[in-house]
Length: 338
Ligand SMILES: [Zn+2]
Image (cartoon, rainbow, N blue to C red; front, side):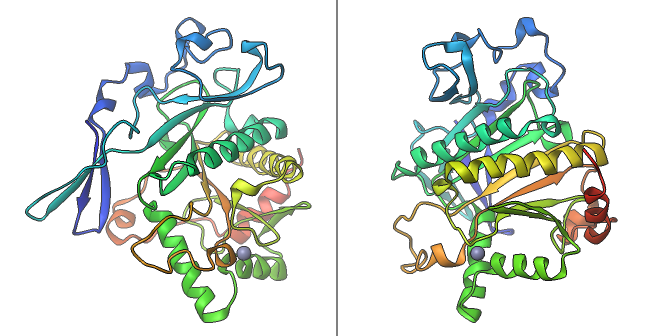
């Protein structure tokens, strides 16, 4: 049974996922999959765990899907695992309660993330939006995270293009950190931290990559990864789950603009897409935890090209090293004509 274990020296939780050691070899190497053994192709819908959600061209034709969601066969966490807390000396653990969903986002087995078209990104974002809204209804879930791993360096374990959604019984530590820093900024200034960053980017212009009606894409001032790119709503918005149809279309176009240029600049890199949005408002041990969160938290997407492994210095110090200034690579990306 999987469980969360707490490392007190780092104040960090680790998921011990012993069930994933039994995954088939192909899923551990992301080797190109032959169509014979790929259970995620159209026409193979009965070979996956039961479908939770799908976007279909024609609702009555099973194989007409554009995205499909079902529980991960080798989940990090499961809704059936009781979130029982245990302690032994300095150690504590919680049963691996949560949800882990697979999002098949492509009918074509090995299509690279950087070749996705705007409509494909739009459908993926709509799938994330709808699944987040559904998972937020479950009172036992405190935060949801969505991501895509493209390539081995980005942690991909399955050849057929897919994304994933993980729901946790606590607020994910990276999201909690963003909430904490954004709240501190709001209490000091009365403003949203990411709104201030976007205003600063729009003033300086040098790191802004592109903008459309709803979104801006920019190279963050302090990128951890080469060619790291962020996408955020221009007008303050805390809730990805409230995304409108118009905004979804614009987000699809924005993702295509960024991904296609990153694909050219870095020659189809391994890459992660991460989505950060405000969590459902539950009871929290800190009584005012969610007070004004809709004013100070700003949802956004991070695209992180994984061109190299992290070094010992980065692991020991916690300081990332980036050899390419964002001012340089943003100019380079803007010059690419597609
Ligand atoms: Zn904002």
